[in-house]
Image (cartoon, rainbow, N blue to C red; front, side, top):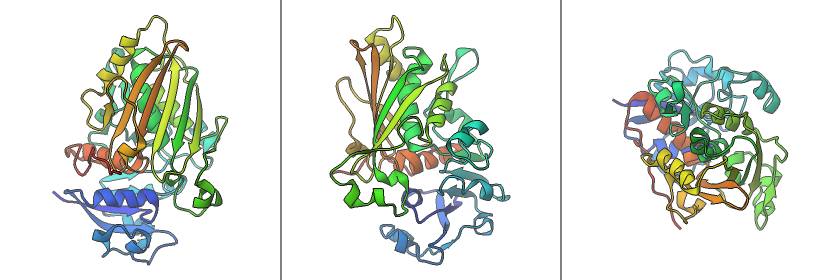
Length: 353
């Protein structure tokens, strides 16, 4: 069966990555692409690398243009998709790559985003550990089976949540006093022209931003850690740093080692969590991930080390913010929701050099 697909926000970075991956998906047919200021232009004017989609023209982003497709992917800025998704009456599956449907707490939305809070949808991180009834360990993919509305994750949030969830769920780390510092590429900030994202401003420097607990992905991380079974209310110091690479996230996260836990028990927790996962891979002991090895791939590469002197566990994770961090997670989740093989249209192989 072929599913008809529309992509809203197709002229941006996330929209372009969605289209790149969707164009190779054997079960999805891209029929409609929409933009805002780009409406009326050929798609390849905004996405010149997508040669197989040169026949498509960007339409205005309206409910009329999107309704009636089997699947609609939204790749719009926060606050822009919620009002539109409410007007889609004849769409089997809607996947929002923006923030509008991620947070369950209206207070968190107001504090970090502002504006109208929309209903939280099924979270699109299949590998994420979720604490079930009676202490059972489940996966978020179980909730995605048959879902009709999916909230794809924030790229930084999913990187940190996947890093920490095995330790939280197994009790080998504490949920309080977590520290995470991320080196991130500017494509995560979107395609709009901004002075601080110009090449001349980025090359040869590293620039921290959203310092002091103001980054919008913080409540999303805390929400995921609660779902993983955090015994205490999660607290995290989260600092992203812009670095001169167009794509990629390298997240170095540390958490307190739980009393009496050995190094072997720590390693075992992450091995159990990801041993059977295709797209989240724990590297051999002593190996560390690089962003370069994840570019274009739907993979998150991870290492875990115990700093015995500090009494902390150090998790280093790398992924492509546009692939596994956004578009890949969206398509992977859509595959599960529709009953397709989870890997359909997605690859573990990156692009090098």
